[in-house]
Image (tube, rainbow, N blue to C red; front, side):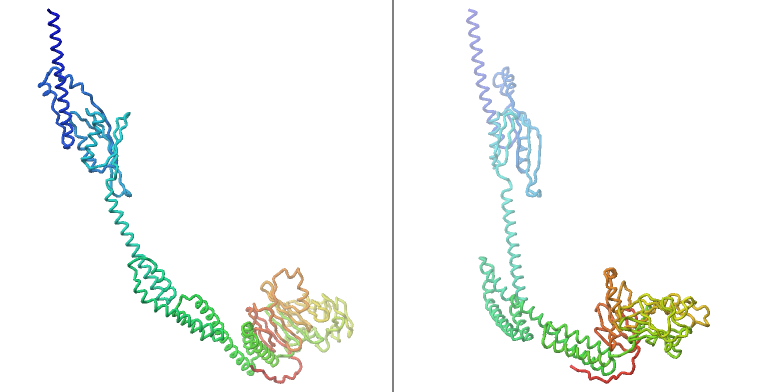
Length: 625
């Protein structure tokens, strides 16, 4: 009996427990539906409380069962959502209820489009809820659908991480509008720039009269299929520019024909007209340059011819006025003008050159001087040149100046007069010296010589006109002998001493006056040579001897040459020096006057010609071109 009672009690307990479980299952479904409706309405979650459920059922079993329901923890990451969308999701997800606990883990903001605007956010939450992963994914999908946002979701099981990435950019429409506006703006600016460039090119061609280029440019523009180009306007102007090109071709052909006929000035006018009608004709431009060069040369030739006529007339006028050097300067300048134009007009210029040379010869023949000798005196050197066959050594006459004689004359009282003195003569076998009966005698190489007996001289021989051992004895040394053409004498050192008693100054020579004196018996030419900015006179034989490799290592330049045969002429050896006679520029060979001053780059030399015996100087006719 007791066993049956226990069995019945156990069966009653099992039936009660089964009915309670069914009631709890029904209440769970009601809770799930309430949660979904709350999420859809974006409102807070209000779930029926378990105590009320337990009061309707069995309070002793409801509390333990509710406490044993499982909770899930997820991480939710939203990528590329706008700040507004993130705020909506955050208001739903971050709302704290009894069944959902949410924590914000990370939040990042990115700025798109060059970092200026269009921001997007990346945010991460940590959620704790009763929803399973599938239920949570479904709830989030419903939320994104309500927001009209396309999302690609990924679930990582090992991390319980939901990653929701926006599939389409939230700024698509804004970007389309922006890029569309930007492209339209660029096209407008490009059109404006292109149109401005077209107008600029056309204006340039019009202002520069480049008709052919204008036509070619318009033809190219007409090929562009753009409706805004002014084709009709250009078509109306096209015939005008084509006429200009045709007219320019006619002018150019006429210019070529005139140039072939050597009508340079007329050809220049026609080619200018051709360029005025069509400046883009490159052939016409080249022809204009050629004609301009020929015109310049032609004008230069005309100017030279005018200058030539003026200089020739001036030279003849100065020659008749007795100004030979000035006349020769003008004549040489006229000759220089002729020689400059030889390559341009050979035959006619050659005739003018010959005529100018004849004029120079006529002026020179009228101005030429014959002489027995010449004295060249500069600050450092004084050269006495005797052009005769013999030269005497003696005392100068008190009434004559010592520097106007062709002989060797000194003011010493111990010397005999010239007619009873020493004579040096040119012989076929060399130069000889002879004592004509001087008072004090003659010593050659320190040996006394007999009167009226000839002795042959050698280079470096010493000649004394009084006993060599006497104080102030006059002595000469042979400094140079050039075969039988030239001999040079210089004073010995013991002859140049200061006067002890100035009352008897004639007993000695002044060293500052006679130290660099040279006496030549010569019929050679003499050269002025510049060596290390120093000017030195050489006879022709001396200059030939000096042209040895040892001496020519120094920089030496021939400046001029004086010709002593017949009439005395000065010839230029180099045009690099400024040579003047009495301040008149020397450009070629000129005859020397009796007395003049020679200047070479500022170096002054006094020239004195020792006149020969009376010579017939009949006036010669000056040719005139």
